[in-house]
Image (tube, rainbow, N blue to C red; front, side):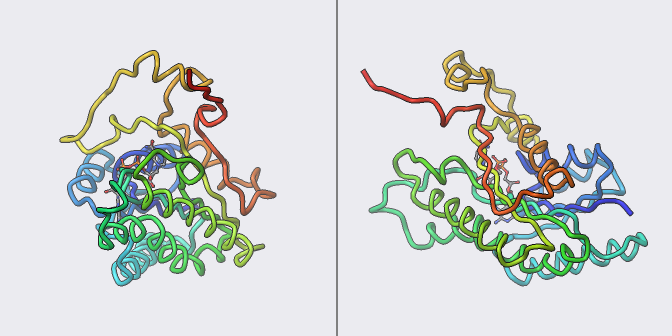
Length: 257
Ligand code: NAD
């Protein structure tokens, strides 16, 4: 039996980097994403029987239910026992800036909450029976912005803070069968992992690099490797925790002149 992961927002960016990381290590991966073009490109570029993609807005209850039915059908068709080893709740509006509070509409506020937090709730709820079948794990992708802020990021910060709270709540409710942890990525360069029309290969300035104690900006593989560790038996004593993966950026004290 091969390990199976479901990754939301896996058509681009950190999610896509994690899809590649796990496929390269023999996992079967199902990707849920709302960007049809990015999904098509992923499926075309990674022709692999171990990969399935589904066009789903993770904030839509019915579409999420359909996607989990499709996952079961795929496993049945391939003679794999029903179950899930990893749910990575990664999808969400990646832009942290929702604008000045006075002009932030309720509709926009809800878009951020639905894509990050409601999506994680709906996918986790749907995944529980499958995760229980394999003693699987949930990894929620939060952000260092759950812990500190720039101006005008209220909707994003609140959604990510909610994900950290959801993480410890789920860990308590779902243990011992299912472990649940969160990762708080810092600055992760996702340009090379976007769909073709948006793909870029930025050169980071010395200032960009130097504000990270490790001397560089992050890459999706940094997060993928942490996800894979948290999904492994070596992490069997870890649940309800949040891990900052930011090259040390949030440890750096800043005194202004
Ligand atoms: P990205 O935009 O490159 O990828 C996000 C993917 O999620 C996209 O393919 C998008 O289509 C999909 N998506 C967005 N809303 C969705 C929805 N409602 N339903 C289904 N799919 C949806 O972004 P990224 O930078 O790779 O970010 C991935 C996650 O990591 C996000 O949760 C983001 O907040 C978080 N994060 C990113 C960084 C960073 O520096 N890149 C830092 C901290 C946290």
